[in-house]
Length: 369
Image (cartoon, rainbow, N blue to C red; front, side, top):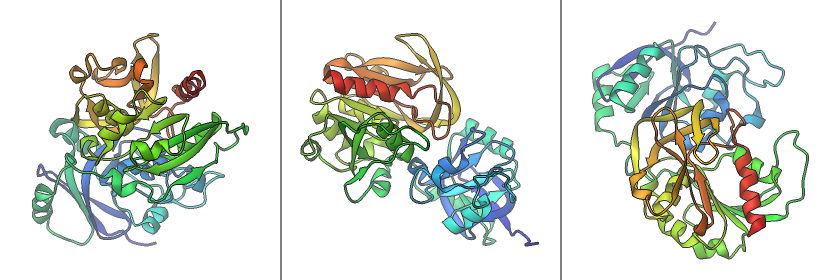
Protein backbone atom coordinates (compact mmCIF):
# COMPACT_ATOMS: atom_id res chain seq x y z
CA UNK A 1 0.00 0.00 0.00
CA UNK A 2 1.29 3.43 -0.95
CA UNK A 3 2.06 5.65 2.05
CA UNK A 4 0.59 9.13 1.70
CA UNK A 5 2.85 12.12 2.20
CA UNK A 6 2.01 14.76 4.77
CA UNK A 7 0.46 17.99 3.52
CA UNK A 8 -0.24 21.41 4.99
CA UNK A 9 -3.00 23.94 4.39
CA UNK A 10 -2.03 27.46 5.50
CA UNK A 11 -4.42 30.42 5.46
CA UNK A 12 -3.64 34.12 5.24
CA UNK A 13 -5.41 34.66 8.59
CA UNK A 14 -2.72 32.50 10.25
CA UNK A 15 -4.66 29.26 10.67
CA UNK A 16 -2.75 26.08 9.75
CA UNK A 17 -4.18 22.59 9.11
CA UNK A 18 -2.15 19.40 8.82
CA UNK A 19 -3.28 16.44 6.75
CA UNK A 20 -2.30 13.98 4.04
CA UNK A 21 -1.52 14.68 0.41
CA UNK A 22 -4.07 13.50 -2.16
CA UNK A 23 -3.92 13.99 -5.92
CA UNK A 24 -0.93 15.73 -7.46
CA UNK A 25 2.16 16.50 -5.40
CA UNK A 26 3.54 20.00 -4.96
CA UNK A 27 1.99 23.30 -4.02
CA UNK A 28 -1.02 25.34 -5.05
CA UNK A 29 -2.34 28.73 -4.00
CA UNK A 30 -5.79 30.30 -4.27
CA UNK A 31 -8.90 31.44 -2.45
CA UNK A 32 -10.10 28.80 0.03
CA UNK A 33 -13.88 28.36 -0.21
CA UNK A 34 -16.37 25.69 0.86
CA UNK A 35 -19.16 23.83 -0.93
CA UNK A 36 -21.96 22.13 1.02
CA UNK A 37 -23.20 19.80 -1.76
CA UNK A 38 -23.22 16.10 -0.90
CA UNK A 39 -22.84 14.94 -4.51
CA UNK A 40 -21.50 16.39 -7.74
CA UNK A 41 -17.83 16.68 -6.82
CA UNK A 42 -16.72 16.06 -10.41
CA UNK A 43 -19.02 18.78 -11.74
CA UNK A 44 -17.69 21.14 -9.07
CA UNK A 45 -14.02 20.42 -9.77
CA UNK A 46 -14.54 20.89 -13.53
CA UNK A 47 -16.65 24.07 -13.21
CA UNK A 48 -14.64 26.97 -14.74
CA UNK A 49 -16.06 29.24 -12.02
CA UNK A 50 -13.71 27.51 -9.53
CA UNK A 51 -10.47 28.45 -11.24
CA UNK A 52 -8.16 30.11 -8.73
CA UNK A 53 -9.98 28.50 -5.78
CA UNK A 54 -9.17 25.71 -3.34
CA UNK A 55 -12.48 23.92 -2.81
CA UNK A 56 -13.36 22.53 0.62
CA UNK A 57 -15.99 19.77 0.55
CA UNK A 58 -18.05 19.72 3.76
CA UNK A 59 -19.40 16.18 3.27
CA UNK A 60 -17.52 13.55 5.33
CA UNK A 61 -16.33 11.51 2.34
CA UNK A 62 -15.92 12.56 -1.28
CA UNK A 63 -15.54 10.29 -4.31
CA UNK A 64 -17.83 7.39 -3.37
CA UNK A 65 -19.19 6.93 -6.89
CA UNK A 66 -15.95 7.62 -8.76
CA UNK A 67 -15.42 9.58 -11.96
CA UNK A 68 -17.45 9.47 -15.19
CA UNK A 69 -16.42 11.44 -18.28
CA UNK A 70 -19.97 12.60 -19.09
CA UNK A 71 -20.24 14.45 -15.77
CA UNK A 72 -17.42 16.92 -16.48
CA UNK A 73 -18.48 20.54 -16.98
CA UNK A 74 -15.37 21.42 -19.00
CA UNK A 75 -12.72 19.59 -21.00
CA UNK A 76 -10.33 19.61 -18.03
CA UNK A 77 -10.19 20.10 -14.28
CA UNK A 78 -10.60 23.74 -13.27
CA UNK A 79 -10.37 24.04 -9.47
CA UNK A 80 -6.93 25.02 -8.21
CA UNK A 81 -7.03 22.77 -5.17
CA UNK A 82 -8.97 20.03 -3.34
CA UNK A 83 -9.70 19.88 0.40
CA UNK A 84 -11.68 17.10 2.09
CA UNK A 85 -12.07 15.07 5.26
CA UNK A 86 -11.62 11.88 3.25
CA UNK A 87 -11.28 11.01 -0.44
CA UNK A 88 -12.67 7.58 -1.37
CA UNK A 89 -10.00 5.31 -2.90
CA UNK A 90 -12.35 2.48 -3.95
CA UNK A 91 -15.55 3.85 -5.53
CA UNK A 92 -18.59 1.73 -6.20
CA UNK A 93 -20.80 2.70 -9.13
CA UNK A 94 -21.54 1.12 -12.51
CA UNK A 95 -20.69 4.38 -14.29
CA UNK A 96 -17.31 4.84 -12.61
CA UNK A 97 -14.19 4.65 -14.78
CA UNK A 98 -11.64 5.98 -12.30
CA UNK A 99 -11.19 6.73 -8.59
CA UNK A 100 -11.25 10.40 -7.55
CA UNK A 101 -7.67 10.46 -6.11
CA UNK A 102 -6.26 9.02 -9.36
CA UNK A 103 -8.22 11.57 -11.39
CA UNK A 104 -6.97 14.41 -9.18
CA UNK A 105 -3.38 13.24 -9.73
CA UNK A 106 -3.85 12.86 -13.47
CA UNK A 107 -5.53 16.28 -13.66
CA UNK A 108 -2.72 18.01 -11.75
CA UNK A 109 -4.92 19.08 -8.82
CA UNK A 110 -2.98 19.36 -5.56
CA UNK A 111 -5.12 18.28 -2.62
CA UNK A 112 -5.20 17.57 1.10
CA UNK A 113 -7.36 15.19 3.13
CA UNK A 114 -7.53 14.06 6.75
CA UNK A 115 -7.99 17.55 8.22
CA UNK A 116 -10.90 18.84 10.30
CA UNK A 117 -13.07 20.40 7.61
CA UNK A 118 -15.70 21.43 10.18
CA UNK A 119 -13.18 23.65 11.94
CA UNK A 120 -11.96 24.98 8.59
CA UNK A 121 -15.49 25.98 7.54
CA UNK A 122 -16.05 27.74 10.88
CA UNK A 123 -12.87 29.75 10.22
CA UNK A 124 -14.03 30.68 6.72
CA UNK A 125 -17.49 31.72 7.93
CA UNK A 126 -15.99 33.86 10.71
CA UNK A 127 -12.98 35.37 8.94
CA UNK A 128 -14.34 35.18 5.38
CA UNK A 129 -12.93 33.37 2.34
CA UNK A 130 -9.15 33.27 2.73
CA UNK A 131 -6.19 33.07 0.41
CA UNK A 132 -4.48 29.79 1.22
CA UNK A 133 -1.76 27.37 0.16
CA UNK A 134 -1.82 23.57 0.02
CA UNK A 135 1.73 22.22 0.19
CA UNK A 136 3.16 18.69 0.19
CA UNK A 137 6.83 19.67 -0.26
CA UNK A 138 7.55 20.11 3.44
CA UNK A 139 7.73 23.92 3.52
CA UNK A 140 7.36 25.50 6.97
CA UNK A 141 3.90 26.56 8.08
CA UNK A 142 5.13 30.07 8.97
CA UNK A 143 6.56 30.59 5.48
CA UNK A 144 3.34 29.35 3.85
CA UNK A 145 1.18 31.70 5.95
CA UNK A 146 3.39 34.65 5.02
CA UNK A 147 3.16 33.82 1.32
CA UNK A 148 -0.63 33.48 1.57
CA UNK A 149 -0.83 36.92 3.21
CA UNK A 150 1.08 38.49 0.33
CA UNK A 151 -0.89 36.80 -2.48
CA UNK A 152 -3.57 38.82 -4.35
CA UNK A 153 -7.24 38.31 -3.47
CA UNK A 154 -10.19 37.78 -5.82
CA UNK A 155 -11.23 41.42 -6.03
CA UNK A 156 -9.96 43.05 -9.21
CA UNK A 157 -9.04 39.75 -10.87
CA UNK A 158 -10.24 39.02 -14.41
CA UNK A 159 -10.33 35.23 -14.36
CA UNK A 160 -13.06 34.89 -16.99
CA UNK A 161 -10.59 35.67 -19.78
CA UNK A 162 -8.41 32.75 -18.64
CA UNK A 163 -11.18 30.15 -19.04
CA UNK A 164 -13.14 31.59 -21.97
CA UNK A 165 -12.98 29.88 -25.35
CA UNK A 166 -10.35 31.19 -27.74
CA UNK A 167 -12.35 30.29 -30.85
CA UNK A 168 -16.04 30.60 -31.70
CA UNK A 169 -17.72 27.19 -31.91
CA UNK A 170 -21.11 25.52 -32.29
CA UNK A 171 -22.59 23.29 -29.56
CA UNK A 172 -25.20 20.67 -30.49
CA UNK A 173 -25.04 18.08 -27.69
CA UNK A 174 -28.09 17.76 -25.44
CA UNK A 175 -28.45 16.10 -22.05
CA UNK A 176 -27.84 12.37 -21.73
CA UNK A 177 -31.05 10.49 -22.49
CA UNK A 178 -33.01 13.63 -23.48
CA UNK A 179 -35.24 13.36 -26.54
CA UNK A 180 -33.77 15.30 -29.47
CA UNK A 181 -35.69 18.36 -30.67
CA UNK A 182 -35.36 20.69 -33.65
CA UNK A 183 -32.75 23.40 -33.04
CA UNK A 184 -34.77 26.30 -34.42
CA UNK A 185 -33.71 29.19 -32.15
CA UNK A 186 -30.38 30.91 -32.78
CA UNK A 187 -28.68 31.69 -29.47
CA UNK A 188 -25.24 33.18 -28.87
CA UNK A 189 -23.62 32.27 -25.55
CA UNK A 190 -20.94 34.66 -24.31
CA UNK A 191 -18.47 32.35 -22.58
CA UNK A 192 -17.18 33.76 -19.29
CA UNK A 193 -16.55 30.18 -18.12
CA UNK A 194 -19.67 28.38 -19.32
CA UNK A 195 -20.59 24.95 -17.93
CA UNK A 196 -21.51 22.19 -20.35
CA UNK A 197 -24.72 21.64 -18.39
CA UNK A 198 -25.93 25.09 -19.47
CA UNK A 199 -25.16 24.41 -23.12
CA UNK A 200 -26.94 21.04 -22.93
CA UNK A 201 -30.05 22.62 -21.43
CA UNK A 202 -30.18 25.18 -24.23
CA UNK A 203 -29.99 22.40 -26.82
CA UNK A 204 -32.68 20.43 -24.94
CA UNK A 205 -34.92 23.50 -25.34
CA UNK A 206 -34.38 23.78 -29.11
CA UNK A 207 -31.52 26.27 -29.31
CA UNK A 208 -28.86 26.27 -32.00
CA UNK A 209 -25.94 27.42 -29.85
CA UNK A 210 -22.95 29.51 -30.95
CA UNK A 211 -20.36 30.09 -28.20
CA UNK A 212 -18.15 33.20 -28.36
CA UNK A 213 -15.24 34.60 -26.37
CA UNK A 214 -15.74 36.78 -23.27
CA UNK A 215 -14.26 39.83 -25.02
CA UNK A 216 -16.62 39.66 -27.99
CA UNK A 217 -18.24 43.04 -28.67
CA UNK A 218 -21.97 43.62 -29.08
CA UNK A 219 -21.55 44.29 -32.80
CA UNK A 220 -19.69 41.00 -33.25
CA UNK A 221 -22.47 39.20 -31.39
CA UNK A 222 -25.09 40.79 -33.65
CA UNK A 223 -23.13 39.60 -36.70
CA UNK A 224 -24.29 36.06 -35.83
CA UNK A 225 -27.92 37.26 -36.15
CA UNK A 226 -28.99 35.79 -32.79
CA UNK A 227 -32.60 35.51 -31.70
CA UNK A 228 -31.38 35.40 -28.11
CA UNK A 229 -28.16 35.95 -26.14
CA UNK A 230 -26.99 34.27 -22.95
CA UNK A 231 -24.27 35.64 -20.68
CA UNK A 232 -22.78 32.64 -18.90
CA UNK A 233 -21.40 31.86 -15.48
CA UNK A 234 -17.71 32.36 -14.77
CA UNK A 235 -15.03 33.11 -12.16
CA UNK A 236 -13.55 36.23 -10.61
CA UNK A 237 -14.64 39.81 -10.18
CA UNK A 238 -17.41 40.84 -12.66
CA UNK A 239 -16.22 44.46 -12.62
CA UNK A 240 -12.76 43.34 -13.77
CA UNK A 241 -13.86 41.57 -17.00
CA UNK A 242 -12.67 43.89 -19.82
CA UNK A 243 -15.51 45.42 -21.83
CA UNK A 244 -18.18 43.11 -20.41
CA UNK A 245 -20.36 45.79 -18.82
CA UNK A 246 -20.23 47.93 -21.99
CA UNK A 247 -21.09 44.92 -24.16
CA UNK A 248 -24.05 44.07 -21.92
CA UNK A 249 -25.33 47.67 -22.02
CA UNK A 250 -25.24 47.67 -25.83
CA UNK A 251 -27.22 44.40 -26.00
CA UNK A 252 -30.02 45.53 -23.70
CA UNK A 253 -33.30 46.16 -25.48
CA UNK A 254 -32.06 44.78 -28.80
CA UNK A 255 -32.52 41.03 -28.30
CA UNK A 256 -33.82 38.71 -25.52
CA UNK A 257 -31.04 38.16 -22.94
CA UNK A 258 -30.64 35.56 -20.17
CA UNK A 259 -27.83 35.88 -17.62
CA UNK A 260 -26.59 33.21 -15.22
CA UNK A 261 -24.27 33.79 -12.21
CA UNK A 262 -21.41 36.01 -13.47
CA UNK A 263 -23.70 36.84 -16.41
CA UNK A 264 -26.26 38.09 -13.90
CA UNK A 265 -23.65 40.34 -12.31
CA UNK A 266 -22.41 41.66 -15.66
CA UNK A 267 -25.97 42.50 -16.74
CA UNK A 268 -26.39 44.33 -13.44
CA UNK A 269 -23.30 46.38 -14.33
CA UNK A 270 -24.65 46.93 -17.84
CA UNK A 271 -27.83 48.40 -16.34
CA UNK A 272 -25.75 50.85 -14.32
CA UNK A 273 -25.74 48.87 -11.08
CA UNK A 274 -22.86 47.80 -8.85
CA UNK A 275 -21.46 44.52 -7.54
CA UNK A 276 -19.62 43.64 -4.33
CA UNK A 277 -17.75 40.71 -2.81
CA UNK A 278 -19.56 38.46 -0.34
CA UNK A 279 -17.86 37.48 2.92
CA UNK A 280 -17.65 33.77 2.09
CA UNK A 281 -19.91 33.35 -0.93
CA UNK A 282 -22.68 30.90 -1.77
CA UNK A 283 -21.56 27.43 -2.84
CA UNK A 284 -23.76 24.38 -2.57
CA UNK A 285 -26.77 22.55 -3.98
CA UNK A 286 -29.53 23.45 -1.50
CA UNK A 287 -29.71 27.25 -1.23
CA UNK A 288 -33.35 28.39 -0.85
CA UNK A 289 -34.42 31.17 -3.22
CA UNK A 290 -37.83 32.85 -3.26
CA UNK A 291 -39.33 34.16 -6.48
CA UNK A 292 -41.04 37.37 -5.40
CA UNK A 293 -43.60 37.46 -8.23
CA UNK A 294 -45.16 34.02 -7.64
CA UNK A 295 -43.95 33.49 -4.09
CA UNK A 296 -42.71 29.96 -4.66
CA UNK A 297 -39.37 28.74 -3.33
CA UNK A 298 -36.73 26.83 -5.28
CA UNK A 299 -33.82 24.92 -3.84
CA UNK A 300 -30.90 26.00 -6.01
CA UNK A 301 -27.35 25.14 -6.98
CA UNK A 302 -25.00 28.06 -6.35
CA UNK A 303 -21.35 29.01 -6.84
CA UNK A 304 -20.47 32.67 -6.55
CA UNK A 305 -18.40 35.00 -4.40
CA UNK A 306 -19.80 38.31 -5.70
CA UNK A 307 -23.34 39.70 -5.76
CA UNK A 308 -25.36 42.54 -7.28
CA UNK A 309 -26.04 45.52 -5.02
CA UNK A 310 -29.81 45.89 -4.64
CA UNK A 311 -29.80 49.64 -3.93
CA UNK A 312 -27.80 50.35 -7.09
CA UNK A 313 -30.44 48.61 -9.24
CA UNK A 314 -33.41 50.66 -8.06
CA UNK A 315 -35.15 52.29 -11.01
CA UNK A 316 -33.08 50.21 -13.44
CA UNK A 317 -34.37 46.66 -12.92
CA UNK A 318 -36.86 44.79 -10.77
CA UNK A 319 -35.52 42.28 -8.24
CA UNK A 320 -37.36 39.01 -8.90
CA UNK A 321 -35.55 36.54 -6.60
CA UNK A 322 -33.92 36.76 -3.17
CA UNK A 323 -31.75 34.37 -1.18
CA UNK A 324 -33.65 33.26 1.93
CA UNK A 325 -30.44 32.72 3.91
CA UNK A 326 -29.10 36.27 3.71
CA UNK A 327 -31.52 38.34 1.62
CA UNK A 328 -29.09 38.97 -1.25
CA UNK A 329 -30.29 39.51 -4.82
CA UNK A 330 -30.72 36.24 -6.72
CA UNK A 331 -32.60 37.41 -9.81
CA UNK A 332 -33.59 40.52 -11.76
CA UNK A 333 -35.52 41.44 -14.86
CA UNK A 334 -36.05 44.50 -17.01
CA UNK A 335 -38.93 43.85 -19.44
CA UNK A 336 -38.23 46.94 -21.55
CA UNK A 337 -34.65 45.73 -21.98
CA UNK A 338 -35.85 42.19 -22.89
CA UNK A 339 -33.65 40.81 -20.13
CA UNK A 340 -33.81 38.57 -17.08
CA UNK A 341 -31.05 36.97 -15.05
CA UNK A 342 -30.46 34.77 -12.01
CA UNK A 343 -27.50 34.48 -9.68
CA UNK A 344 -27.88 30.72 -9.20
CA UNK A 345 -27.50 27.77 -11.59
CA UNK A 346 -30.83 26.63 -13.11
CA UNK A 347 -29.08 23.88 -15.11
CA UNK A 348 -28.17 22.12 -11.80
CA UNK A 349 -25.02 20.04 -12.58
CA UNK A 350 -24.92 19.33 -9.69
CA UNK A 351 -28.07 20.11 -7.77
CA UNK A 352 -31.86 20.05 -7.88
CA UNK A 353 -33.87 20.53 -11.07
CA UNK A 354 -36.28 23.07 -9.53
CA UNK A 355 -35.20 25.96 -11.76
CA UNK A 356 -34.87 24.36 -15.20
CA UNK A 357 -38.08 26.13 -16.17
CA UNK A 358 -36.00 29.29 -16.64
CA UNK A 359 -34.61 27.88 -19.88
CA UNK A 360 -38.18 27.47 -21.11
CA UNK A 361 -38.87 31.06 -20.05
CA UNK A 362 -35.90 32.17 -22.15
CA UNK A 363 -37.08 30.31 -25.25
CA UNK A 364 -40.60 31.67 -24.79
CA UNK A 365 -39.14 35.18 -24.64
CA UNK A 366 -37.33 34.47 -27.93
CA UNK A 367 -40.53 33.16 -29.54
CA UNK A 368 -42.61 36.14 -28.40
CA UNK A 369 -39.95 38.55 -29.73
